[in-house]
Length: 169
Image (cartoon, rainbow, N blue to C red; front, side):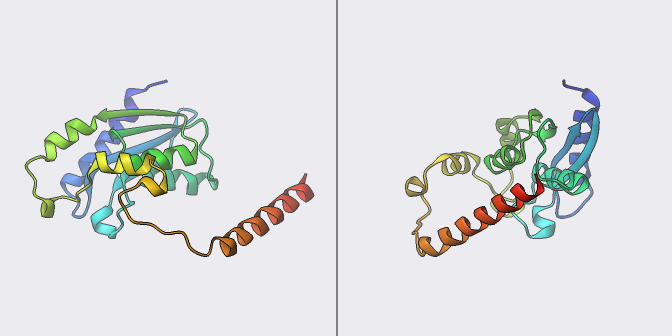
């Protein structure tokens, strides 16, 4: 259930970018059972990490704190509608509910006057299209190689995982 205090915290985190070099105004909190368990601010430029979005950083923080990779039942509050990469991360982590403040369109309008050099450029529509496309339908050239070797490792890992799980049951 939506609680303004959590959205206010996400927006307050985004405000830190006004004073912190190398950050961008995208803040996020992860909430479980009415308490904040993870926070994140976009540090892409500071960390030279294009995946360091506020949502991804908050998910990383929550997972470290809980020592797990499953955030089922958690809510995500973010200062801006998440990009496709962040949505994919939320899905992988099992986030159950999203609340966002600014839309992508509103963020785009705010950044419209900036040059490519003045911001970390993301074509959100291209990202959304590529993220949802089959590998052979994406604009980025790709080629599959050595799949038999990789599949053998995947199969071995899965068998070992199954055996370890059976022992612990």
